[in-house]
Amino acid sequence: MISETICLDLTEMTKIVDLQEIKEILRNIDPIQEIEDGFVAFSRGNVVVPPVGEMIFEDPPGEAHIKYGFIKNDDFYVIKIASGFYNNPKIGLPSYDGLMLLFNQKTGELISVLLDEGHLTNVRTAAAGAVVAKYLAPKKVTRIGIFGAGVQGRMQLEYLKGIIDCNDVIVWGIDQQELEDYKKEMEKQDYKIETTMQSKDITSSCNFIVTCTPSRKPLIHVDQIVKGTHITAMGSDTPEKQELDAAILGKADRIVVDSIDQVQSRGESYHALKSGMIAKEDLIELGIIIPNKTLYRQSDDEITIADLTGVAVQDIQITKAVWKGIAPTE
Image (tube, rainbow, N blue to C red; front, side, top):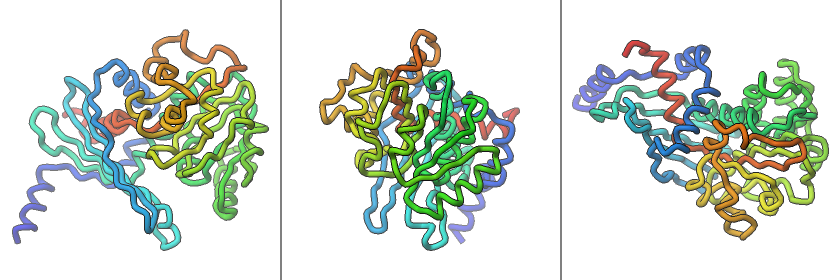
């Protein structure tokens, strides 16, 4: 009886939003602009983001991330919990799950629970990849390479529409059926898709590459990188994960990160810093580049790396945007 009363009171006070409603609201939102604005606010020091909380599981392999924070002088703060259990498809479950908790910054009241099942994390991650492309992609992208044939591998490509004028794509994966499913689905969206299980097939033919896998060992090595290559690396969001040979960052003309503080403990930059391939001074935040045209890609010969580890300001921005779609007058 007591638990039923608590549940009833929570429902009356708090708006609970399911995935279907969230997806409907997203139709009227520009996530790319929301995330871009968030990066700028973050790099200007206007966002409070405590260290990431996380749990890593070995058997079965999985992880749970807790990211949280607030924009100064704003109305809200957000706590995000997101998980990834990569063997789930074998038992008929999705790999990802999660939710967003939106609180009143002035009173601490729980305003809304967004039961997004990890979808908003995927959206804000894909939107971040698009933001990077706006400022660092070569003027002429000859071919797009995607490492990872899962949900994020699809969404990265979808969010590049309108930013990169290229429909020639090659995708890398470790499961032939997953690759075939990717090809079938994305060709319906007017992409020309080739699939491969060989890393060099991508690096030898693409000047714009996105990596979005949970790999714990490098997928791309330094001898594969040629002039004019851009890589957006976003799979390495824990200290254990790594998609790029650390020497690649040492070879790069520019290394752009979402958070200098955060990449010192995770991401591709973490491995490169630890191995002495780069120094902290070699890093620049995306939120610094966005408002400064002199920091955009300067030539198609540059080798550029974007190391995205996922910052709480992205979760804040996408959660606020969805909430505004629910309660625009509040």
